[in-house]
Length: 559
Image (cartoon, rainbow, N blue to C red; front, side):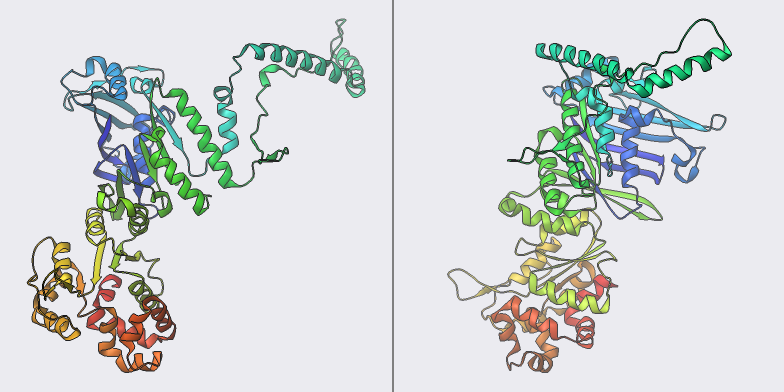
């Protein structure tokens, strides 16, 4: 079974959206754009616990009470061997024909002004134009017999979860348990007798009987007894921590540890259902209260454990996404009203060895509104310094500098473009020796063409590899390069980072670095010497860099 798509109309901050889904989905965006509301839309379809609360006027988009709320989920069940497809087909029965490979599940809720609520009505079937209304038994619909929603709140209460589900988690079904339970009952009986024999209880009993008889003397007396019962056997069960090589028990302190224990409980509960039902995991901000290392560990579990086959996660943390592969990235954003875009992300085969590096860089970038892609740490360090001076809170305003570290620009561009995240590229005008020939390929030009997806710059090799030859190459093609800047936001260096700086800051670099050849000095120990330079740059230096043609990429991403 595969989640394919969802349509949401007139629900909370969603006017009318259509979003592609997969079986693993990550929802991200700024605060208050609708990530939680999106999960609630799914919950109203699949989760009996939230659905029985009905819907209020506040659940209607802009309180448009004259229009119904409509939520439609599309599932692909073409895999006839898949056990979940079989479970769904068996439950649908007459609502699904054998030739149908898709299931449409639709919720419609019309506001009743008299009752002041909207009752959800569910229907499903294989033909979207001829759906069958689901049968209902109490507050349970037919869908509730095939789907089980495990909803994990961002601030899950471990103890409440434990007490609510302890009877499901703890089962005394072995023969030896019978003897133990009898002993417990005998002990409880003794305990009740001992409690009743306490002098304070006896004295109270003696006082209470005559007071009662003043009101109604019918030849009876009052007896005080203790009624501790076996039915409360699990009422005070609490998880404790026991460290290896230590026999002492310690309270489960720390919100992070409590949260991981809660996940463990949910995992066990899901195992109880998996043979009968299809488990859907809806998880809000799993990173809350978790240290970075714990977030990374949780990421690995969420994206690799088969238990989480159907996963819907909201997050603000890039560390939760580090292990992601074969996931659907859904960006929710707001421009007056809420919009959503999604793209399926799969680590390309050529990047498998660098998967974590690729994922980590990308997972940070997708939380931004604007991304400046650069080649490496030197560019990052310099541009961070300049933007911090010109635009001190640039990161808070959703601007992110992303070094690609040799992974390449194309993969990042395609993902950012699909997610409608504005991106700017700064890359070097590189040349590379053509194997077996005394000529040089125009690597920088080729890189620009690849990012654009068409050949806008010449790719004919040149016969000289020098600073001057690179500048001549740039000058000859400056009109096309400026068009590429304007239309595709790709900024090619005239030479490279250090030479582009030296072109207009030579004397200043000589003074700051105390070296007559600042380019050579910067390139000898690239990162170390760039950090040295950055420490010495004044605010005026940074503003001059920001406003120069060679570094116009900074102004475009910041303004």
